[in-house]
Length: 352
View 1 (cartoon, rainbow, N blue to C red):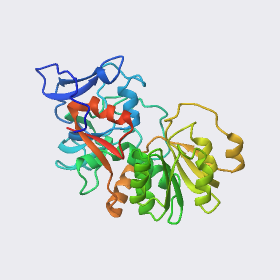
View 2 (view 1 turned 90 degrees about the vertical axis):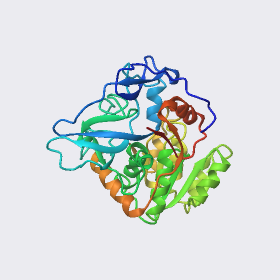
View 3 (view 1 turned 135 degrees about the vertical axis):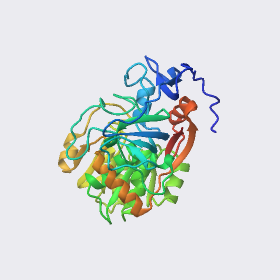
């Protein structure tokens, strides 16, 4: 285990039947507590009972547990959960006992256009999440996991994996021969690199670490650039992309990186605004965006139907998530401190 020492989480509620992590208001990594709570019991009509085996960490989860995004006192965190169906309620035909499943980020968004603009129904934020041993939820809150995936691998799909899939394939219409720019080495960017290469696209990647850039090249990135030593990286990306710019940009930085992403993207290209790592607001070079006739699209994860299609594509392509490391549930605070350090390459997982 990575050297942050033992977690200082406390345990309470000895008479209950299930372990869970809860966030004590006003939040913060030192305010996470392991508690015992009542078992959720048997599923009702339309519900399934799932034994959770793994969760994965996302920037959104960090926002909630760190207190940067307000959550209800006593909220169980973690939006991504993967496990095994233990029981099926009346009227459920899609799942059987023993099925391996993975959660949906927006359980209320089945198909079609996005119906939500907040996180009121998102596990680990507006409702309780998956940092626990067992849940009973509507069957529509899960899809089947890819065949052959471990629970840890499946747990990376809910947020990071589906976001990359929607950005490139659903919204971007990625095709063989396209060029893709990915920023950094977080979960979404690594997934985007893997998916793009699997679909026959060329990938250019950025990082502030030469060591991580070497790993990106080993994974198949055609070109890499250190954005600290070359802050005007948009021009270099355009040069590498035949002087026209890339077809797609996976933009995770926000206002601090968007101007360079606009320069790097071709006329009429597609920029997926996924993250705000450099700030929630800032100046956008609208004239440059307009002149280059680019499509800048904000997005947050995707629908249940998109996830089902994504799972099918993973089974066919053989793409497997890149997991940096795993922590046990009781060391959830240490896991987030490691994410906070920025040392990870790929996904961080909690095992339950």
